[in-house]
Length: 102
Image (cartoon, rainbow, N blue to C red; front, side):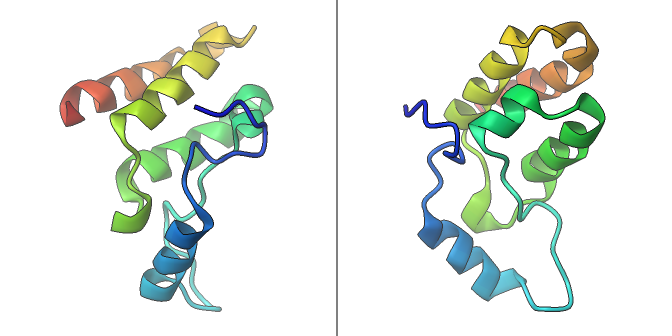
């Protein structure tokens, strides 16, 4: 696991390129195509972060579907935030995802 703030939870650039080739176009953006960086998960406002993570969890194309390990890392970052109480629902979404996929 990398702790690089700009890392997108280990997803390589080739996965984004493949998803773009399969699902993207200049006019449309498919939900789940954006994967936040570790820094964004650590610092983004809850109301901004929530739809991004929910789309990644439930709407991402096959090339970007998160693993339980990736979502476990997201969950750990969320739990360590000073505003973790405000993120309780999102933390629960991560927990449920991990249980459902495992």
